[in-house]
Structures are given as C-alpha cells and as structure tokens.
Image 1 (cartoon, one colour):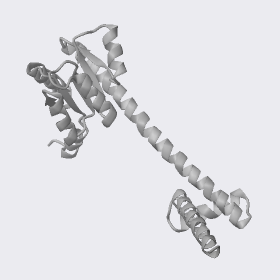
Image 2: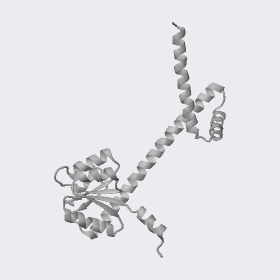
Image 3: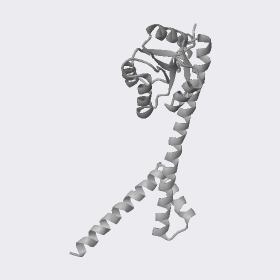
Image 4: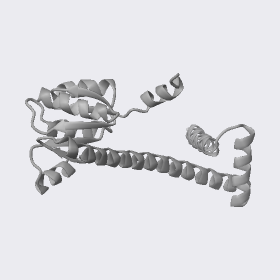
Length: 215
C-alpha cells in the first residue's frame, strides 16, 4: 500500500510556480515541463490575470514574458518588486548580455531565452529558483536580526533604568530583570518594554503634576 502520509507531505511541499505569457501554446508547454519536473503551476495570459492569481496565492517564483499587450512584463515586475515579495524571472526573446543586465536591473533572479528549449529551461529555471530561495532567506534573516537588535536595545535601556532607580550594577540589574521575566513566564524584552512604557507614563504624569502645581 502507498504511504498516505508521505504522499500528502510530497504534495504539501511542491513548489508553486506562476507562468505569465500571452502565448497560450508556450504557457501549456512550460506548464507541462515544470509539472513533469515536480512543480505545481498556474497560468496567466496577461499581467492583470497574474495579479489576480497572486492575490489569491503568492507563488514561489513567477516566470514573466517581457512583451505582452496591456501591462507589460516589465511593468508587472516593477509592481511585484515594490508591492510583494514574489521573486520573478523573465522570458526574453534576447539572449545577449544586455538582456541579462535588464533582467537584473528590474530585480529578476534570472531569465529564460525564447524560443524555449526544455534542455536549457530547467537549468536556468532551477538556478533562478535557488537564487530566489537565497534572497528569501536573507530577508528572513534580516527581519530576525532587526527584531533581535530592537529587543536588545529595549533590554539595555531597561537595565539602565533599573541601575538608576536602585543604584545597582549592570549585572545585578539584568539578573533581576531576567529572573522576573522567568518567574512570570515572559520574555525579557517584553518585561523591558513594559518597564520603559511605565517609565514614560510616569514622566508624563510628573509633568502634568508640575503644570497643575504652577497654576
């Protein structure tokens, strides 16, 4: 009997690729090649249709024809680059260095030259997908780093506040803050943020009291 759990996991981990081209025969060909290689695909014959599909589900990678009626692939790329995190490659009728430079300048992770040859398609496509994964990981790392730095700043400010309030050293202030967080099953930066907010509120109230006393 087939392993149902393994089959479900394989389906769940399929990479989702959006192909955008006004050439319907090429759309079918590219979809067939990618599906045969184990990818889940969706087709759009215009940039407008592509945006509708992306609104429903963001693909792991989009293949965009550069020249299409209405909104061109370049215009679609600009929108994806500025408003989404969807990585994209271009389908280009030119294979020279200028085409590569143009693709890079728009933020593309690669380009496939027309007429599309299955033998050359998959290496170019897989290289583009690998580059897209690298960029996605870098963005995720950057977000995590920024969050860690922000949390570190809050903790440092809170430790300084405790040092001033209780006339203690930095290590003792941090240990008290950490132990309090642990005993309340909270993160240190959450308690630090709570302390800083309370201090800001007290300062505002202090100013309000002073203003009232001067009347």
